Length: 433
Image (spheres, rainbow, N blue to C red):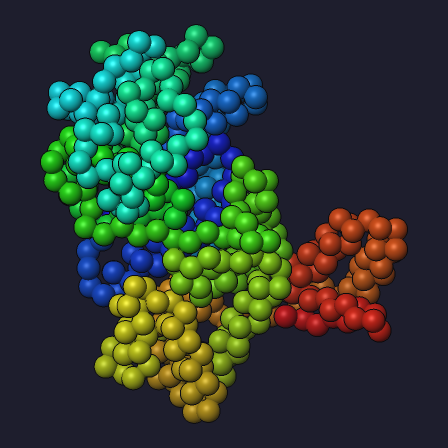
């Protein structure tokens, strides 16, 4: 399985967490089903945004990307995301990219331009558009800009970018095409084919990558090698804020670290994976509060036993059978999590050690319910009531002074410590969660 990873010029936001967790669940389910999984998730560490951010910061590209990769690992580890089998960095695969470009040029699918770039000739590849379901003519009809002088067709895309004098030396590679660097799309073709072969099982990524990135990967890889790139293509849905996609370009994103400052990591994981990976996911504090309460119900059921035994899953058991059927149907986590709640209800009724073990084991398949129930349920109970009252009073003063940022910060501060505020005409009430 190959999944398009992050471009590391900034901290990861919740949209990145969605993709990491979606495919973490996929690889976990395959392993639970007895498959051997080779999972590749790449890192784009050379890109216009990276070059620009490094220049703004007054640091080298390598310094910036190393720092952001370390941050990515801290955030992913906090969310319980298993490390992929391979995590290739694009900079290390430039020779493989140049090899594919050479093959494409030899087949008439790539051409050099007067300004030193090398472009892919889209009309030379008969299957272009098959992933997005659009023909070349349909895609051309949607063009709103004039074709660049260096392009034979507006849909043609760059494989090799000629170096600019203003760019740092570390952003340039020598090649038969002259000094420059690879285009974004060719990076994934090179890394996936080098590590998994020219034909592999699953290619994944965010829904925004289907076109043009994945379409272009198909054109490059299949154009060069003459075999299908992947058997299945999987795309996770967006995280939305106020009905718009969460993204850095829209400035409406929340970093993973910002969210984890207010909510525990297992709650964030549960919030993301209880929605089907292909569906849009609406972000709000209310939805995260609800996720915390739902997860609390599962842990409360497990807390009925002094110690929950560890036991292997028995797929012949009715709840496990239903869980398996849900996950086998396009990784149906909403239905699988519904089974967990049914099992928790049964555990509440029977106090059965076997039901508790099954609930914990099924939760573990999704990366959930592995904490001590008492530890999870006690989380946030350390703050004294006097301190809660003081912070609520400060919040009231902040709201009266129209300092809503401070008021919201206090609310988040309390929630991070397990205290949920509820405003009403009668005043502010609180409860521990």
